[in-house]
Amino acid sequence: MTVGYHAAGHNSYIPVETLTDSLLNRHPGDTVALTEVIVTAVAPFTSNQTIGPSQIETLPSNNVADALKYMAGVQIKDYGGLGGQKTINVRSLGSQHVGVYLDGVRITNVQNGTVDLGKFSLSTLESVSLYNGNKTEMLMTASEYASASTVYLRTRRPERSSLSASYTYGSFSSHKADVNLSWKNHAFIDANFTRSKGNYPFSYHTEYEDTTGTRRNSDITMFRVEGCGFYRGFRLHSYYFNSRRGLPGGIVRRLSDLYTDVGREWDSNFFTQITYATDIKGFSIKGMVKYANDYLHYRSDYPENIAVHANNRYRQQDIYSAATAAYRYRDFGLSASVDFRWADLVTDVRNYSYVYRIDTKASLAAYYSHKNLSLTANALYTSVTDHTRGNTNPLRRFTWTAMGAYRLSQNLSLRTFYKSVFRAPTLNDLYYTLVGNRNLRPEFTRQLNLGLTWTTNYIDLNCDAYYNRIIDRIVCLPLKGSYQWTMLNYGLTRCLGIDLSATLHLPHSSLLVTATFQDDRNMTDPSDDAYRDFIAYSPRWSLTGVYSLHLGEFYGSLSHIFVDKRYWTAENSIEPPLSPYNCTDIKIGWRHRLINLEVECQDLFDIRYELIQRWPMPGRRFAATIKINLQ
Image: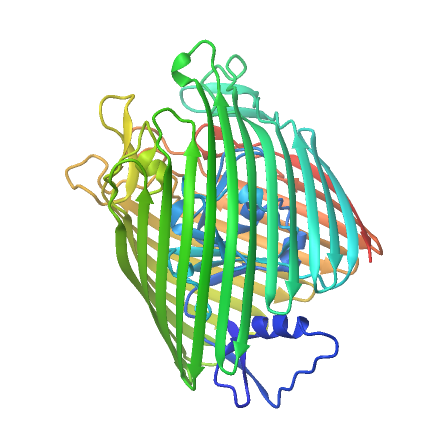
């Protein structure tokens, strides 16, 4: 539910969140005159799920991916271990169709289009939210309309001045230290250092093999430091991440202790961004700028096999700016936004030419709200131009969104939306020496959603039925023999699904339960053997449950996930699917004055499972944390 206010004599609708930030950014001597404040509850246009600060504290989670996996419609791809890459897929649309935003600014990767959620900690966040479609706030950037689904990470504003430090020791020789310095309402700095050997035992059993061994070359050392400053309508956020890690690769049949992947990766990621928002006599405006610089060094040297030798470096830069303005008069509202992004990629890969991309977007949105009815529509224009050796054709497209909501009663709301989006091919898709294809067309996605929300003081229920359709899906397929692959536009896929979620509010505790059913199939060619086969890594059923408790000095959670079988090949009959799995986590914490003690166990019953074929997860693992808070 969206909650906001209308001030007397003020025509614009402003979320409570914006009002709170505005008040906190006043000087002590400033005064604010609100002759009348009317709290307004607006029927939600689109399904959204949020994990707030109390749940973040109780979850046995290390990063954003660990929180998102409990939401309906979400599949997390995890390549195993503390250092394994973690990406999100929502409603089987693909990771590139999910926009990830930190304080309203998108996190991007022009090279491959995905965001590694394992690099972002929960310790600095106030909330993690997932929207199917997009938000319906008036001050939205054009980029926010360009994704099929959106993840919002909201930075926590410090409520008091404090200094805290924590140390965690966990399974597989894992060490983690964190220091946070906060200045009430104005700024914080948070630094983290993590090291793990990561060599965990695994077992792999199928009809044809019985493999046991130890995951090797899965160590990681990483350092993260970030800071955020708040002043009036300004918010400044800077972030730096550095890591070196082993890449254990997929396990090899019956050779797990004789064959070790020797791949190594070095990462360095930096960005700084500043946003500003204010309201002036009925007009709301917001602006933002961002600079990002990412470095990746990948090495894989096999002395006995020159065919898989690699030692490459990649550097990408990103400059982004956006401006948004909105005005509301009585029941009507109008907003407009313009975005500009410049990004380049430099690499020492053989025969790769320097390339930079200019991506501009413009959006126009209209809003209408009267009594129990709310409507909104948006038109988005996107222009993408790549500049490199040879000629490239600009990509220009219009897409649009329409949303509606109606409050049937005080507790029951009906909502629907239609959204068309497209995904431009990444620079790897187009220009990577071995597989790139400059003639790729963008993926087109159409979404249709119908949902209900029922809310009381004790329970929130959401049910959404949806239909997704992807045209010209970009895939990597063999073109000439088994060893020469290329990127191609291939086929049509459709997904029918239902998402259910229920949140029960109990004294000192809460219970979140979600269920997802999906039927995601290849509908390309009726004469093909793979026609109507399930799309790889799309389970038909997935269930989650999280019980969180705060009782005096004690807090904790018990969480469970069930994921149905998943096929992992384009043609389902080629290989058997990955087995269904259950995973249970538990965390218990105790807070007394200046000290916090926490213990947690992930995969409590030691269920051996895989999220990606031949990338086994660690199994049962423990961690203990001590934290000291000085205020």
